[in-house]
Image (cartoon, rainbow, N blue to C red; front, side, top):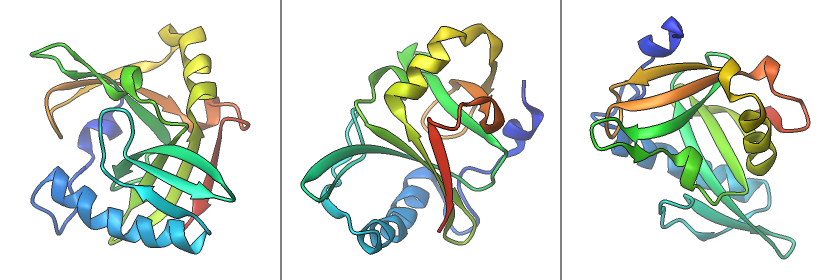
Length: 161
């Protein structure tokens, strides 16, 4: 179990809860997407994805994940709530990309993960990755932790924002 993961603060210093934390940072991210030339088509988050973006006639579906510290890893939710055994977003997202956003006072870094490529990579060798339980967010979740350095470079990229 990654000790550093268990210590992290998902909510941020100015927010009282996870939903407020996400909503506050979505405003910044919407501005960022627009400065990169994307048009926001839909931000009605659902179980399949958080938003749809369009650029040059191409529509992409994006799932956003926020963290308040960069632990050098990609944490994925396998079971959303251990008490009900609901599947985590790993199994139900229909996103093309996972945008993994590191937040200080506002978003400062963006890891973009090509979801299908990552999922195929992860499932080929799932037993080698660490799992941990988190009581933050929407339930008691089971997550897997994968260090960025172990994920092939053609699956993800990092940008400062």
